[in-house]
Structure formats: structure tokens, C-alpha cells
Length: 207
Image (cartoon, rainbow, N blue to C red):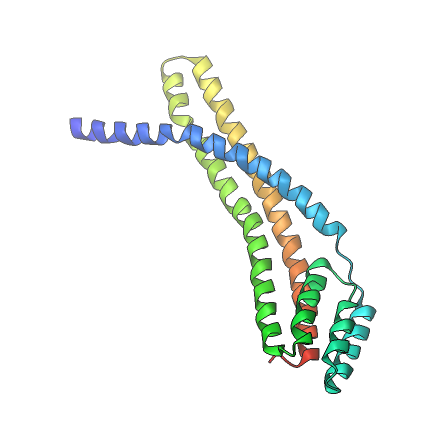
């Protein structure tokens, strides 16, 4: 019986010691999620997709490559007026194209795909971890709250329940931001990768 009580005491002490780290991390996640909103709005302002411009530039690039005029093809590639990621890829690809390093452009596209995945990881982690930590912040204070209830200490009960509800709301708030940003960015980056794949097909290095 004493061993069981000691074990339960260790578990309770360990779980109770996690409360303040959980609260601190939740606050940091909320601040980070608000920063992600600002970054998201900045990225949204830079998005501009012009399908006609994309097709025109790719046609010019294809014609110049078939004529072995890699310098002119690179110039046509730099004339792209698209979303930020696609334009950045086109600018980098143009440098390789001038040197007739077509295989390097395929490698470059994979690097951009990894870069997009990395940006999605940030919001995906926030969307996943925040509700988990919110649940931890909800359950941990329930122990002291029940003890306060058993002892008739209404103030202790109220304080712990307030912490439990607050951490739940904060966790769901940060998680919701992360989820929404992840879904919207995922659609953006699918579109960007489709445009990059079209450029690769024009350069005949996509396969």
C-alpha cells in the first residue's frame, strides 16, 4: 500500500511540475501563431499568378532552347511575372540555364519543393501540438481542483478550473490558426509546384 501511494505521489508530482512549462510553451505558441499570420499576409501580398505570361514565357524559352540559344532562353525565363516562389525558382534556374546545366535545374526544383515542405511544417506543428498542450493544461489542474473540492476550498477549485479552461482556449486558438494557414498554404504550394513542373517540361528536364 505504501509503495502504491509513493508511486501515485511521484506521478502526481511529475504531472504537476509540467503545468508551468506547458503554460509557457502555449503562450509562446500563441505569439508564434500571430507572427505566422503576419508572415502569411506578407506572402499573400506577393502572390500574383498570370497564366498567359507563364505560357508566353515558356513558349519563348522552348523556342530558344531548341535553337541552342541558352542566353536568350534564360532572359525569357527571367521575364516571368508569377508568384514569389515561382519567380524565385525561375531566376535561379535562369542562371543554370545560361551555363547549359539543365540537370541542375531539376535538382533546383527539388530544393524548392523541400523549402515549401519546410514552410508547411511550421504551421502543421503548431496545429498539431497546440491542442495537445491545451489538453495537458486542462487535465493537470484538475487534480488540485478535485483536492480543493474535497476539502471545501472553493477558491482553490475556481483558480485551477480557470487555468484549465484558459489553457484549453489558448491551445485551440493557436491550433486553429496553424490548421487554417496549413490548408491555405498547401493549396498555394501545389499550384506553385504545378507551375514549376510546367517550366521543367518546357526545359525538357522534368522526366
